Image (cartoon, rainbow, N blue to C red; front, side, top):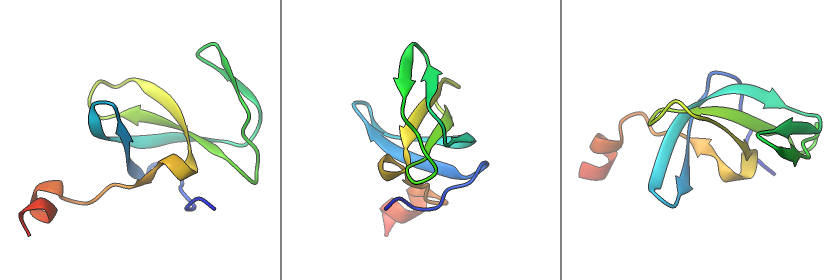
Length: 79
Protein backbone atom coordinates (compact mmCIF):
# COMPACT_ATOMS: atom_id res chain seq x y z
CA UNK A 1 0.00 0.00 0.00
CA UNK A 2 1.27 3.48 -0.83
CA UNK A 3 1.96 6.23 1.65
CA UNK A 4 -0.82 8.76 2.33
CA UNK A 5 0.36 11.76 0.30
CA UNK A 6 -1.47 15.07 0.18
CA UNK A 7 -1.49 18.16 -2.04
CA UNK A 8 1.56 20.30 -1.30
CA UNK A 9 3.85 17.41 -0.28
CA UNK A 10 7.36 17.53 -1.75
CA UNK A 11 8.11 14.11 -3.21
CA UNK A 12 10.87 12.39 -5.12
CA UNK A 13 11.01 9.49 -7.56
CA UNK A 14 13.51 7.69 -9.72
CA UNK A 15 13.59 8.37 -13.46
CA UNK A 16 15.97 7.61 -16.30
CA UNK A 17 17.75 10.87 -15.42
CA UNK A 18 18.16 9.94 -11.75
CA UNK A 19 16.28 11.13 -8.68
CA UNK A 20 13.74 13.89 -9.46
CA UNK A 21 11.79 16.05 -7.01
CA UNK A 22 8.52 17.90 -7.28
CA UNK A 23 5.37 19.00 -5.51
CA UNK A 24 2.01 17.25 -5.54
CA UNK A 25 -0.61 19.56 -7.06
CA UNK A 26 -3.58 17.19 -7.23
CA UNK A 27 -4.75 13.82 -5.91
CA UNK A 28 -6.72 11.85 -8.53
CA UNK A 29 -9.19 9.17 -7.45
CA UNK A 30 -11.19 8.64 -10.66
CA UNK A 31 -10.37 7.57 -14.20
CA UNK A 32 -8.78 10.50 -16.05
CA UNK A 33 -7.45 11.23 -19.53
CA UNK A 34 -4.02 12.76 -18.85
CA UNK A 35 -1.78 13.83 -21.73
CA UNK A 36 -3.50 11.44 -24.13
CA UNK A 37 -3.49 8.41 -21.83
CA UNK A 38 -6.33 7.04 -19.72
CA UNK A 39 -5.15 6.76 -16.11
CA UNK A 40 -7.10 4.34 -13.92
CA UNK A 41 -7.01 5.91 -10.46
CA UNK A 42 -9.38 5.03 -7.63
CA UNK A 43 -9.97 5.80 -3.95
CA UNK A 44 -8.09 2.60 -3.11
CA UNK A 45 -5.20 3.31 -5.53
CA UNK A 46 -5.00 7.08 -6.08
CA UNK A 47 -2.58 8.72 -8.47
CA UNK A 48 -0.95 12.10 -8.05
CA UNK A 49 -0.27 14.97 -10.43
CA UNK A 50 3.18 16.30 -9.61
CA UNK A 51 4.90 19.47 -10.84
CA UNK A 52 8.60 18.75 -11.36
CA UNK A 53 11.12 21.08 -9.71
CA UNK A 54 13.54 20.65 -12.63
CA UNK A 55 11.43 21.83 -15.56
CA UNK A 56 7.93 22.66 -14.20
CA UNK A 57 6.37 19.83 -16.25
CA UNK A 58 3.34 18.14 -14.76
CA UNK A 59 3.25 14.37 -14.63
CA UNK A 60 1.14 11.71 -13.01
CA UNK A 61 2.41 8.89 -10.80
CA UNK A 62 0.99 6.15 -8.63
CA UNK A 63 1.69 6.61 -4.93
CA UNK A 64 3.85 3.48 -4.90
CA UNK A 65 6.28 5.23 -7.27
CA UNK A 66 6.72 8.26 -4.97
CA UNK A 67 8.37 8.88 -1.61
CA UNK A 68 8.58 12.01 0.53
CA UNK A 69 11.55 14.16 -0.49
CA UNK A 70 14.40 14.42 1.93
CA UNK A 71 14.76 17.88 3.48
CA UNK A 72 18.36 18.49 2.39
CA UNK A 73 19.89 15.91 0.05
CA UNK A 74 23.40 17.41 0.29
CA UNK A 75 23.39 17.08 4.07
CA UNK A 76 22.14 13.48 3.91
CA UNK A 77 24.75 12.54 1.27
CA UNK A 78 27.63 13.98 3.35
CA UNK A 79 26.91 11.79 6.38
